[in-house]
Length: 194
Image (cartoon, rainbow, N blue to C red):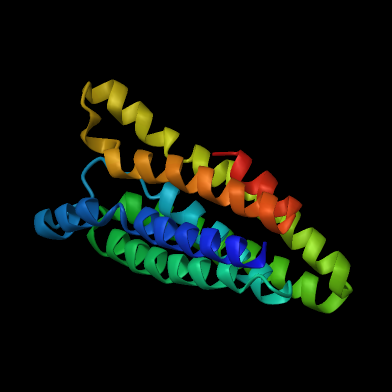
């Protein structure tokens, strides 16, 4: 069973990497046009926060290195995306994005990690961070719905990338299977949001 869970976890990591990289076309367009156009930053802000929390969860929970590594990669990718977004966003959007990054990706994340490290014991720390990660996943995977407003307004699906939708679906399926194999309830709740 360990071999099967490892293989499924590696497949999950590959699909997750593809999911994290699915907005590359969007960011090529942003850099090429030197503008964020109608694209929203909220999905990238939420994905960074979620990835950072799951990286921490994977570090503090023994045997969860597959969760830690792929989410660590995702956090780095989201930092790059957010940096590009901040560089090319108009001033008002840049300010709004910077405030949200400061509040959520720096403030909330730092508070969660500090409280978990300084106040909670090992088992409770894992439970609290797992609960936060699973809860924030609802926000992360709901945040692309902000693009739906643009899709409806413009009557064009160009702001709702197909690859993102495909890899979200595949990612949810494979990580659900992995969560069942390793009996990780928080990871299971996390991916059921997909």
